[in-house]
Amino acid sequence: MNGLDDVVRLVRAGRRFLVTGHANPDGDALGSMLATLHGLRALGKEVVAYDHDPAPRRFSFLPGATALVSDAAALAGPFDATFVHDCGDHHLLGDRFPSRAVTGPLVVLDHHASGRDFGDLSLRDSDAAAVGVIVARLLGALGVSIDVTIAECLWCSLASDTGWFRYASTDAETMRLATACVEAGAVPWDFARRSEESAPPARLKLMARVFDTLELVGATALLTLERATLTATGTTTAEAEGLVGYARALDGVEVGVMLYEQEGGVRVSLRSKGAVDVGAVAARLGGGGHRAAAGCFVPGSIADVRARVLEALSGR
Image (cartoon, rainbow, N blue to C red; front, side, top):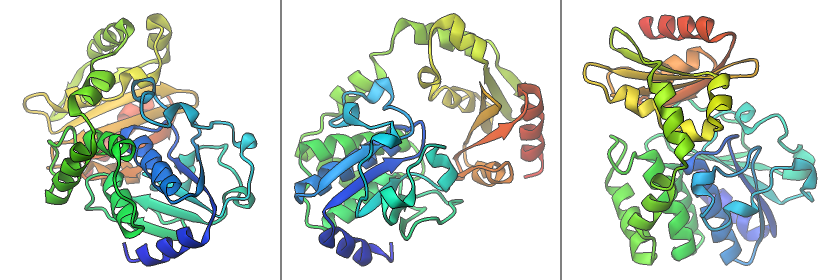
């Protein structure tokens, strides 16, 4: 967070900003970028939100989520700067990320321990429970008060990346920010109802098929999602997010693995109970993340990638 003063000066001097996050945004990426959007708008700035992919259906109710731009060609640059959220490597922004002529300098707000610096300025803190914590620090330094709109977005970031305040990263600063969000008008049950308890019936069918693939290899539990399963159930990978947590939750399991078959390879999601540093494992496979939560994309078939993941875990 050593660059906080520099980022504050950049914001004060600028007029137009772009906010973004990694492709296929999760709750932390989306919530934190939208909190920054509303915070900068409170200062009278012109702000646009962009992501390689649309907001997940389960978070589409967040203020500003439906206005997320996914067509880079539609962005009218140049911007005075672009704020990148929850992204540890430039390639995770997707293959349509706009050019430097459009984005201006990049300001990276991130908390991944294995992140690779690619921004002109970085607010990086691997101890932050969620990127929303870093955003709140920035908004505080800018003199922006948390109103109900910002609070709802920050709550999404916090709840998503702390597992509803269960994970080891949850600390006193996290809980103070959560309290500030509730005091500003965020309603935890309303968020839970709309994000966690409004799933389409097809998600249940998807879960049944995915859970049927469960495989136990020592202290590792693996789940697999083939593309054919998505077609058969009429779902997308968004409906499968979070299922890896069920694998980790099994008795006697230290690491949960979810393999998502995609074009050209397999997206791997890794979750650990703490004894295994899955961030380091993912880094060896070209990805990254935290000690307890990480991911990567590995070219090849499901069988090949499964073998590589197990080999990487055994060599930890």
